[in-house]
Image 1 (tube, rainbow, N blue to C red):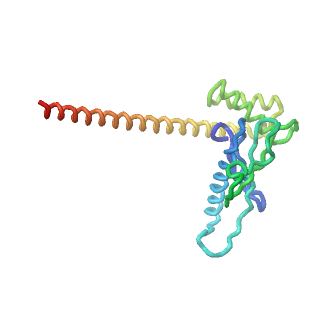
Image 2: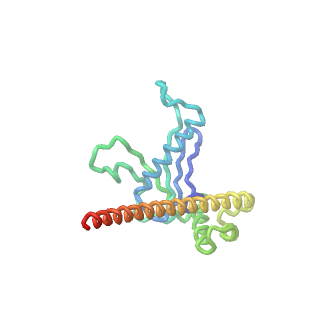
Length: 212
C-alpha cells in the first residue's frame, strides 16, 4: 500500500519471483517499464540477501521472474499482456523484452477482486478524510460490512491499521521531502536571478561611468 495507496510487491513463490505492480485506474503502456524497474530492484535484493556474486564466472541460479499488474476496472478492449518491445520498439530490433500479465476486475469474489475493491473503498475515504486514521477506520468498517476481505480484516484489524497508518506517515514524509526540494530549488533560482540582476546592474554602472 504505497504510492497512491497501492502495493508494489516482489516476492518469491517456490521457484518463481513474482512482481506485482500496484492497482492501476488509468491505462498506460509505461506500466511495463515500471514493472521492469521493480523486477531489477527485487532481483538485486534477492542477490544481496543470498550473497550471490554477479561478478563470478559461474552460472548463477535464481527464481524465474513473472510480472503482473492489477487493473482496477473491468476488461474491455485492453490487452491480456503488455509487451515492452511491442509498445516501444514494434518495428525495430530490440535486445530487451519483457511481458506483463494484466489482471482485471471481474464479477467473481476472488481475493484479487476483493483486494481491488478494498483499494477503491480506501481511495474514496482518502478523498473524504485525507490520509488520516479516520479514512483507515472507515475503510475497514465499510469493507467488513460489505464482505470485502471481511474475514481477514476481522482477524487482522489491528495489524492492518498499524501498517496503513505507517504507510500514511511515510506518504507525509515523502510529501514534506518533495516540498522541501521544491523550496530549495526555488530559493536557488531566486538567488541566481538576484546575482544576475546585480551583475547586470554593475555592468551598466561601469558602462555609465566610462561614458561620463
